[in-house]
Image: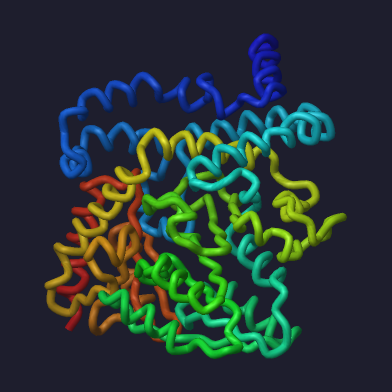
Length: 432
C-alpha cells in the first residue's frame, strides 16, 4: 500500500496522472478496447454504429443504475467508472494533507489538463479556462464584455434561462438592449434561422448569442453560418455549447465564433461540476473576469480561474473523461448516439396521438428528442414513463415548447430503446 501511494504521488508530482501512457484509463481498459477495435477494423462506420458487441464494452464501463433507465443525459450524464475512480484517488490524496497536495501538487495539474482539453477542442491551450459549468463560463463572458448603454444583444426565447437572465441583468445594470427571437422547432432550414438573426440586426447590435444545440428539443443551430453573417457586419458571437461539446464531432474554431462555454459533465461524461470556457486569444484582454484578478484587463486566460479553493480532484478527473472520449472517437460517438435517438423516435413517430418536436435529419439533431402525447401534459407523460416503466426523462414546459425530453448516451442499450418504444406505445394507446 505504501509503495502504491508513493508511486501515485510521484506520478502526480511530475504531472503525469491521467495524461500519460500509464493513465488509469489505459490501465483499466486498454486490453479490452484494443481487442474490440481489432474486431471491428473491417467494418464501415455505419456498421460500427450498430455493432452491439463493440458498444457493449463501452456500456460496461459505466456503473449506471439497473433499477431505473436514465434518459435525461441532456441534464447531466454519469461518469464512466474510471473517471469516478480517478476523482476518488485524487480526493484521497488531497485529504492526506490538503494545503500541500492540493495547492503544491494537484494545482499544478491544471496546465496539462488545459493542453488535453485544447487538443480535444482544437484550440490553443492559452485560450482554454477550466471552471465548473456552462453557466459560469457564459455568465463570465456576458458580464465581462464591455457593453454599454444602448448596445444591442440578440438572443432567442429558447436559449437557456441562466443566459437569458444574465442579459436581463446587464440590461438592468448597464442599460443594454436585449432582443429575443422566437423559433417554432423543429426548423429544417438553416437559411431561415440565419435570416431571422440577420433581420434583427441594427446599427446598435454588438453581440449575438447562439445556443449550439437547443437544450429543450435538441435542434442543432447553424452556428458557423450565423457567425460568418455576424462578422461580416462587425458583430461578435458567443456560443452556448453546453449540449454540443463531447457530443458533436467539431473543433471550436470550426464554428468561427468569438466566445464559447460548455459543461463537461454532460456528453463528455466528466465529473459532475466541471466546465470549460474558450475565448479567442486576441479577445481575452477585453473581457473582465467575473471574480477578482490582479490584472483584469490582461491577456492571460488564467484570470478567469480565480475561484478560490475548488475541487482539484474533480478537475483532474476531467483528464480521464477526455481519454475516454478520445478512445471512442468523437465522430463514432456522435453517430452512435444519433443512431440510438433515431432508433426509438422513428418507431413511435407515426403512432396515433404521438408527436415529435425534433427533426430526425442528422444535420438538425443528434441525441435529444422531444415527444408529446395528445391528451397528456408533459408532466403526466413523464410521470407515466417513470411510475409504470421506471424510465427517467424530464418534462419541458418553456415558452412555446411543451414536451418530454428524452436523451440517450453511449451507455444506453438497444434493449433500453426497445423498452422505451414499448412504453410509449402502451401509454399513447391508453389515452382516450
